[in-house]
Figure (cartoon, rainbow, N blue to C red):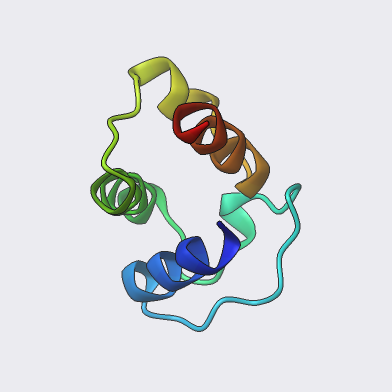
Length: 75
């Protein structure tokens, strides 16, 4: 799951992504801001064919949060 996310993040943020861990905060990624965060969420939803709830969106602060939600949805 990391590679598809890395590709999405790199495209949306228009930056090569550094190595990350589950605890890497979105705010620590190059090119991140609040508008980019929304764009990332939309791009991830489109790629994985899901829709995040508003509670999920505000609870995601790091890569691991997003991966955990996606894994729950995709089994």
